[in-house]
Image (tube, rainbow, N blue to C red; front, side):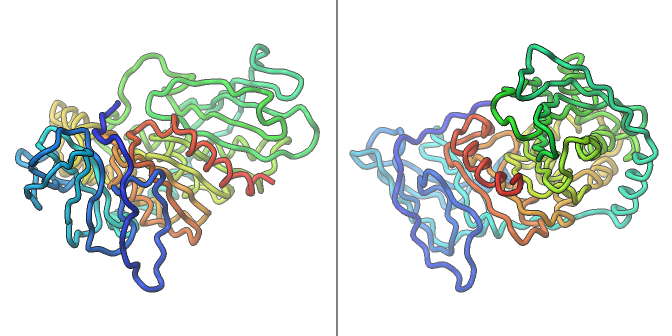
Length: 410
């Protein structure tokens, strides 16, 4: 899903006086003056695709965007200069994400101190017990992997396989595996896929000394029969919800890699975008063999606020529960067992998260509901202000992610 951003030039350096002893854990590249990492007061200095002259400027809180009348404030008259620049005194703002509106037709997002955007864990009292019993049931399922060689995606350096194995409640998961031909124990990169994303094959010559594993959870990836939905499956009970099985498939992928004679279980890392970003977080929460993670634009965070910011996916959940005669309150309570922000306190490994400030699919608030609940002592984030949801198309993130993960693979 692509969103147009009506900004055509970079802006001034973010001016702020930082809180003593507190360093922001992230950076904004390129700096367009849309992400304020330190203390205010704030001034928005940027250029816009707008004719010079008087213009009305307003801010809207992100968590009111789905309201019938969004919460609009800081409404004022500004002047678009001859060079298309504007300077707007924002004053002091609470941490969070806001939609800037110029002449009502030009809209883009800004962020204020994302490190301080708090959405506390709302894990049910039996959250740990539920997942302990679920993983115990998973452990009782024999892995029994089947590996089918794919010659057209193999060479003398690495061999490609399609993998299939058993998971919880009769589910089938697996993925696409690249294994080095050289002897010895090799590091492994587990990559989790986005919601309904199409599988792909790695270049067998790209990383000849490491294992690459692209995971397909049940009914997605290499097992996908159609373009059906998953978010609204099994809403009647936590035992039946789709993501109970899918999260087990996430854990099973780590089990599978660690079981390989060619894999070094001390050098396993994980990454992924969107749903894959959520799965990346879950992998580290459920299995300490994952030594570092690099998720981006993570999905499935902060269900309670999600539907206040964007329509999808929660309104599909609401449509289905209404059609099935289920209680919205009870379904939202059930989904707390699967909210990635409630897994975040269990994550202690190093984390590097990327997000797009203009993301209309997994909005930044939901990303930081996860990030700011992490227990990791080493964590940082990268913001690309002009990016929407398609972080996987950003060369900068690709290079940053590789630089972050490589030390854990050596």
